[in-house]
Length: 194
Image (cartoon, rainbow, N blue to C red):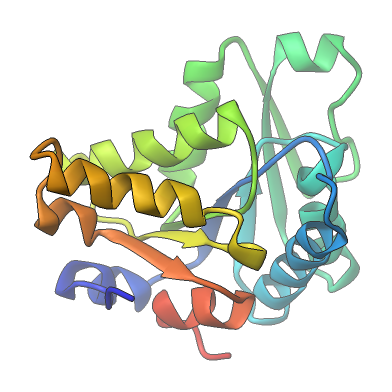
């Protein structure tokens, strides 16, 4: 497992908010929802705010409920199209309704000091890879942690290794993907006392 770079260790000392990318579904394995609740709770009990997609369904809801139940700050950012589908979470500390998905991601990224990625689908993957791409382009120096709950991302990690073998990704860039198997490991990678 890669260790945080000097840049991410510096960033970890100033973490006030963590952006969490995750599914709007619960998935078929109950441990995914349990990890989302645990992550929200543990961030809240350490005084670290949660910034996420602002939905009241799936792992996004579990994350928010875990943090809110522990007295945490939870900021949601949701585009109008999802508000229209009635999935906005109105019980948050702050809910920002924006015009586009692009604006959503930009606001989430701007408010976060680090990123943690839980299991998810296309939207989660896209957010994860964009955060990594921005890091490689030096648009930000915020650490990105993949929380590989119950091996959910094992196949993706093998694919990234294949990208290195095929010369499409450098080993140095592959190593910016910080991988944790548990919530405590994810927090430790960010320098957050567990």
